[in-house]
Image (cartoon, rainbow, N blue to C red; front, side, top):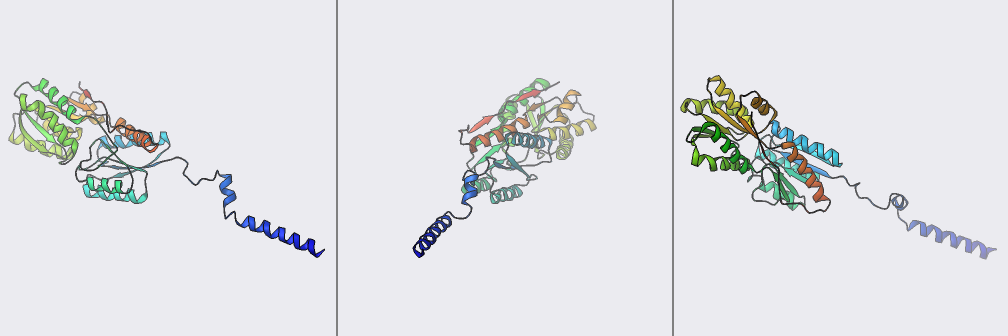
Length: 308
C-alpha cells in the first residue's frame, strides 16, 4: 500500500514539474499564434515645411487620405517655415520610433543633419516636393521644378514679347524649389527677357504684396512677373491692381485661389504641380518600401500649365 502511495506521489510531482517548465503566458501565445509582432500597420512621420500655405495643406491632406486607405498611421508635424523647428520635429519623430519619415524641407541643406540622425536610427526617409541635399533618402517625389520654371518662362514670354522688362519673385532661400524654379525660368529669360528685379518674398502672400509694391516704385515700366509660387503671385497681383497697372503675372502650384484668379482673368496663369498626388505617392512609396519592395530613387509627378 505504501509502495503504491509513493508511486502516485512521484507521478504527481513529475506532472507539476513539467507544467512549471512551460513558463508564464505560454498557453496564451499558442492561442494567438505565438507572435508578438504588430498587425502590419506602419507609423509614418511627416515633417512638412509649413501648413500656412494652401499648397502644403493639400499635400498633407493627400498623404493623410492615402495613409487611411492603406491602413497606415501618419503623424504630421508643421515646421512653420523654421529650419531649426523642423530639425527638432524630426528628432521627436525619431524618439517616437516611427517606421519611416517623410520630409518636405524648409531648407534643403539645413535638414541634412536631421535626416542623418534618422538614418543612424535605422529610420528610412522619403523627401517630397523639395529635395534633401547632403544626406540619404530612399526616394524623392516631386514635380520637375526646373521644367516648371521653363514652362512658366516660355508662357510669360509669349504674353509680353521678346525683350520685355519683367520681375521675378523668389521663394525661401535654401529651398530646392526656389533654386530649381528660378533656374528653369532664367534658362528662358536670360536669352529672351529683361529681368530688371529679382527679390525673395519667401513663398508668402503678404511679402509678395510688399515686395511687389517696392518693385513697382523702382521699375514702373515692367510688363510681366514670374512668382515662384501662387501665394507670392496673388500678393503681387494685389499690389499691381492697387496701382492700376496692367501686368501679366504667372504663378506656380495651381492652388484653389490661383486657379480662380486665372478663371476670372486676373492672373495670367499658373503651373499646376498637383500636391495631393505628391502626398499620395509619398505614402504609397513609403508603404511599398516598408513592405520590402524596391522603390525608385526619384519619382516625378507631372506638371500642367493652367491658363485662361
